[in-house]
Image 1: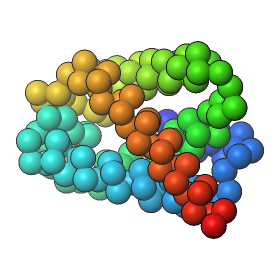
Image 2: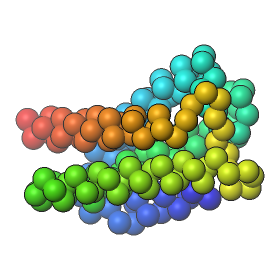
Image 3: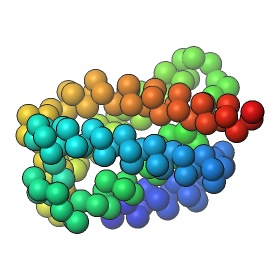
Image 4: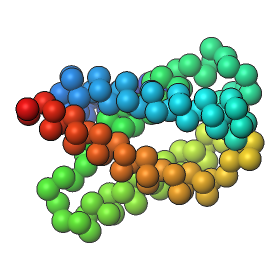
Length: 147
């Protein structure tokens, strides 16, 4: 359900991102998530989706859940605003991501995400870094498009 909802919101509300940027963000997000999941999920069993095995059921979450969230983050990002507004924007998104993760940890039918040794505190530390990486990747893509 979240896959459908996030994609609808991302594409309906998009006013900033070009098709080229969307493709870049989508592929970048899937690649980064796949690499992280390969180690944290498969090798070290820190967390997993649905089951601890590689399974088809997790494929929509791995390929179509985070890219539209990243699109929304970038589409609504207050690029020309004061630093304080951008800081609050980050805080709101980090809170949203942590709340969503907490919901995904609920028992089925709501939840599909499971922790091994991973903790929500780790996400609290990692999520801001991931958003900074995403924002810098987007700025780099914009710079390449202009040249």
